[in-house]
Length: 210
Image (tube, rainbow, N blue to C red; front, top):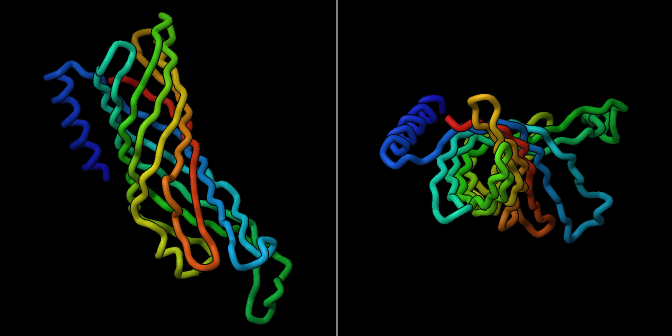
């Protein structure tokens, strides 16, 4: 993965020198969630997971399109998933041992986004809106405590939509940015005759133009 990002930086550096476009890096946190909608059992008996905090980092390339509008291409590494405090059970104690354990599902993605960026220059700051499609491709997943096999049937690649607010600002000789993005899937993550799993996430990111 490190070599891949080095190659991408080399590529965007060449583009920058040839076409005078902007590029940089973004880094931050991702709060992801999943909704488990049950169809054939009582929802009270279902699984209602909590949100999970992950990490995101990537590079971006920004090309001018129209006055006040640019096109932003991003390549990111994103950690998503869910977690839940559950009652520990054993074969000797199927109703629970009285101890709670943390069940975690972590899914790491390579994310490619193509976003329209509309902003207004106010001098020191430049607020903007972001919107556009994205593709997440699963790199790997990890499950703590639970060993259910149906997680392997979760979709490996997912199309979605990103909507966000942000602002550029200048600090001494640095051109920085901060933004919050909502990431919504176009389709379910998993579905069978009993349950449909959908997901979404919030990204909180800071960045710098290089």
